Image 1 (cartoon, rainbow, N blue to C red):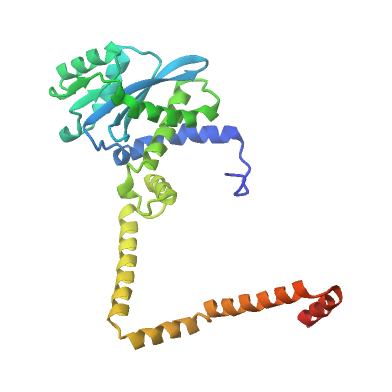
Image 2 (cartoon, rainbow, N blue to C red):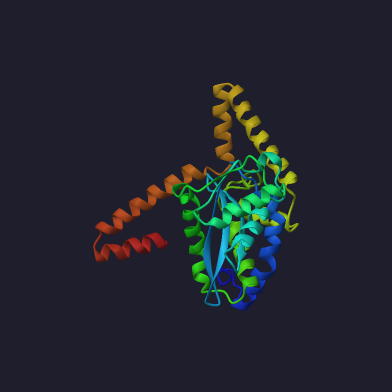
Length: 283
């Protein structure tokens, strides 16, 4: 990507950018993408290799596949599960907290949920399920994340792995449309604008929304004016606008037809007549 733009950048420079800006991006955009759509959570962990050893990435998504939270831990025990669930529940409103948490058969989750309920961090009416097929959503999401991690060719430290995964998770959440209310164009450029606004680059979201509304109102006004005009007046204005534009469409059509005639003439001519045609065209 940098070479296409005429910039020569070493891979170590890009690594430093990721380690510096990915955690900051996750911190600044957290309130935009981290909004659970459903109260039914799917919680599971997957392993990530760090210096040849397995570490465990805890992840939670809702039943629609939207990312809720993630946590990288060197251990897989009750303490790590409790820390992850506490992190996922922190900062949520009462109506955003889950009514059901589905996990696998690991006994650590049951103990962690019970301890969080006793501490008042988890609602008392939250149901803990252990249904295997319900976790297919988060299992499939693991695979898509691993497709991004695989080309990295491994991590050296837990800190660098966590920083890189933060960037992956945030961009995947934006790609899922979790911050869709701030993506005014509904494309990859809108996702880039979300990140730029988080770092204070360009106009704010309110200014962009006002500009888009003004453009939409202008288009609606023009459409209403065209509908309210008589047919003859509309035809005249259309013809006048075509004349003002230099008759691009009709000129392009005439040019295409003349070019086709030249091509047919040249294709059917002999070698001697071809020279004559060329000299005639150059004249």
